Length: 313
Image (cartoon, rainbow, N blue to C red; front, side, top):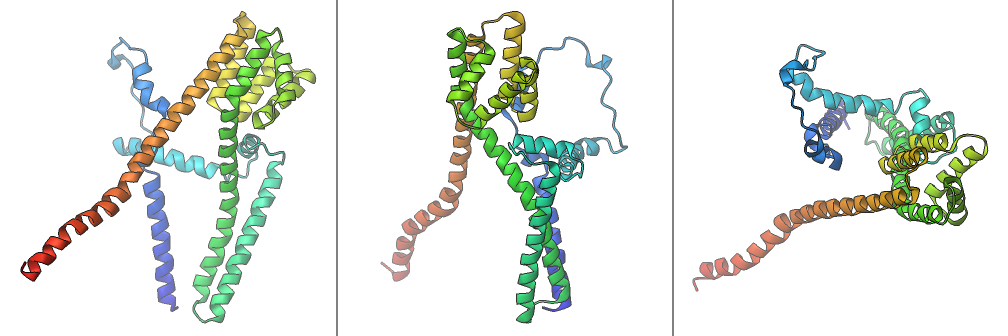
C-alpha cells in the first residue's frame, strides 16, 4: 500500500467516524422517553403571562444555533465525562454494576485491555508487513486504533453490565415487593420484612436488600440506608419504592398497600416497554418486506407477461 493510499484510507476512516458520531448525536436520533412524551399533558396550567417571566439567557451570541447544538454538546460532555480520571462518577457506575472493585482497579483493567488491543494490532500489522501489504503510517494507525478500542471496549462492557443488572433488578422488584407486602401485612416490621426477603430470595435486588439490612444492623437508620440504596441504584421505580416506604413510616400510611401499588406500577411499566418494543419491531419488519419481498413478488408477477409479449404470444 502506497503512502498516499494509506493516508487517504486514514482520512476517509476519520471522516466516516466523525460523520457517524455527528449523525448519532443529532436530537432527531435521540429516543424520547415515555416521561418526556406525557409531560406536556401532565404539567399544570400556568395562568400568568409569559411576558412577566425572564427568558432563557444565551451563553453565546449565536442564539437559535446555540439552542440547537447545546443538547448535542451536553451529550458529548457527558460521554467524555465517563473517562474522567476522577473516581466519583466511576465509583457510582461500579456500584450500579454491583462490582466490589475500586476505580483504580477498573482503570488498571482498562489499561490491560488497551495493552491487549495494542498487542493484537501489532500482531496484525506485523503479519501484513511480512506480506508487504502495509506501510509504517497505516500500521501505526492500526496499532493506536486497537489500543484505544480496547480501552473503550472495557467501558462499553461495564455499561452493558449496568444495563443488564438494572433489567434483572426491575424484573425481580414486583415479586419482592409483593413478598414484602405479604410479610408486612402478616405483622412484620419493615426491617423484619427485608430480613425475610434476604433469607428466601436470590438475585441482584435481594443482595442490595442484604446490604441495606447490614447497614441497619451496623447502626444506620432504615430510611437512611434505603436512601443510600436508591442513590446507588439510580432506578426510578426503586426511588419511588424508597419514597413510599419513607412516607409510610413517617406518616403512618399502610405500608402493604403502598408496596402492592408500586409492584403493580412496575408491572404496568414492563407492559408498556414490551408494547413499545413490539411497535418498533413491527416497523423494522416492514423494511425487508417493502424492499425485499415486495419487489420479488412484483417481479414474479410481471416477468411472465413481459416474456410472453417479447415472444409474440
